[in-house]
Amino acid sequence: MSTSADIPTDQFAALADTETQRLAARMAQDAFAGAFRLAVAADEAADQGALGEAAARCFNWCQAAGSDEARALRLALLVSGMDQWGLAYTQAFRLQAIPDLTVLIGGLRTRLDAGADARFQQYFAAINEDEAAVIDFKIALRRAIHLALWHAMAACETSEQVGGIVQALGSMMLGLNGKMPTLGWRLLADALASMQISLLTGGVPPMAAEGTQQLFAALQHALPGERYQAIMAYSTQAVLGWQQAQRARPGDAGEAS
Image 1 (cartoon, one colour):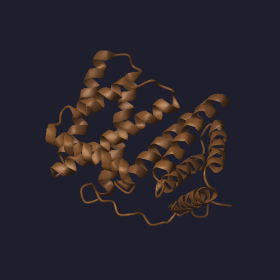
Image 2 (cartoon, one colour):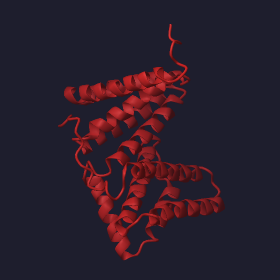
Image 3 (cartoon, one colour):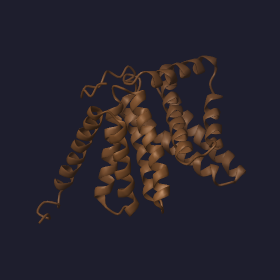
Image 4 (tube, helix red, strand yellow):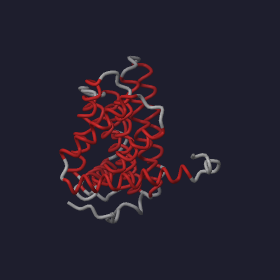
């Protein structure tokens, strides 16, 4: 179990730089959000058109890469991201499936010839097997997923509803920690810092603080002490950095009493 500050080299950085990886995370989120909305809209004709447009946007972005390898990696990023969003929501909200998401992902795969599909599968597997592979994508993706579920928890009306999402979110975080023994703690620290910053910005429902306390307590109970302390130390540094940046913004100086 490592809590070193050093991040191993990303073997795919030459094919997808930091900005490309972060863009892939945002595109996967947008594609999932569209598919999820369609899944609850009950308009089959609209579904087909919207899913076709979403698939075309994703596919065209992949095709714009400079090589077959880079195109395969981009598609693997998008599919991996959408798949993780789908898994998170089915677990958190106890859904059987999200059919429109399945159709969207399947539509992207069916556009590939045999060679392109083989390259896609190679990169898709590598993303899951190598912790450091596309690490900027993984950080951005997990931050967005965890924060989206946190906001869903904050919008709950009862403590029972809060507890259900907190349990699912905590399980996801612990699963990520187990799957990524070297770097998982960094992803968790980033997510927890984002939650704390959201609380500090104000305007969140009262349930947000209650659920956050439950989540932190559950993680503290389940994680080894050294691991939890490393997560909290890194998270606290991120929050302090955000606070300092806020105080340094033009026009903010002198406002504090």
